[in-house]
Image (tube, rainbow, N blue to C red; front, side, top):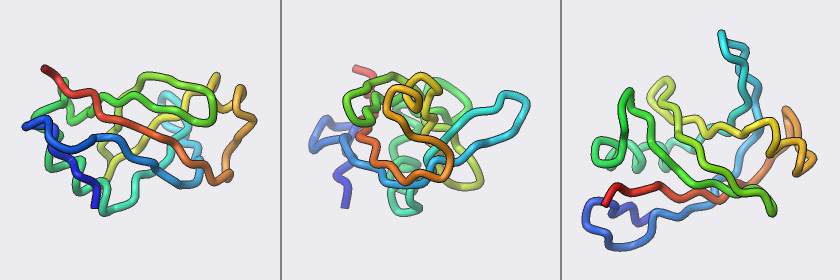
Length: 109
């Protein structure tokens, strides 16, 4: 169980997310890793306390040696973790690859 206690500052909001890189072909094409359902449910529990609007949850992420700042997108009852093109190119990963991304929710203080 991920100890998401962002409201009280107890525990850690850091977690590793393993999933397949998928390409979303919407108005703004992007690449994502979908959070597992259990983790998405835990993020939803704290989202109201950390979101800056539209259910977006700010996170710091790392794949290999590459770090970036992004926000989780709410989608169909879950969350998608965006993986920027520069991150994919730097780390040599592409659509269909299974990756592990470390992420930590940025908590407003």
